Length: 231
Image (cartoon, rainbow, N blue to C red):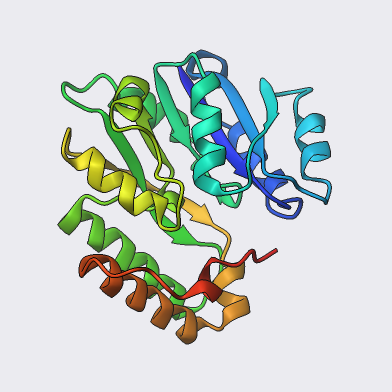
């Protein structure tokens, strides 16, 4: 069984589509343990939306210190499931996503899994960034958060969860790589492209390249504009 952990902060626009993508999953009741919505202090209708979906989905809503890493860590701590799927509130699973994830757990030695990633918009720059993301994984085995990262629960706590700072997904993946080689499934999750559209496509791409450079060379990640909330 799989627990889905969704960190939320003012996600009333994107959250309905994300939860609907879960509701449409094949073999949902056989694969899903629960959905843990971890709210970081939303002042919009995010929590209300989650409560409405709890009529049709096994949703548990908790609160945690604001910050994607701290929220995901809080969700992981209360989950009893052997597998933890960390899903961003603006990222939709493919229709057979849970089934693909479940089947991957049957393979010997698999401890971490992700999907290919694509954006909701049609701009060529978005397609290029997704192509870079997916290519980067094959070269580095680093999973980005918007690829829907699933990790075996025991493994997650063995590496002490997400570092509570920016680029938590990259830093976590580096620790994870010391224990296993993650695999990428041949299916795409769809991430809302609002951030890139609001920043400006090519400017956002330059942020991505700059962050990659800083991470690769062990520098402190700046580019604070890229990490602002875009709603």
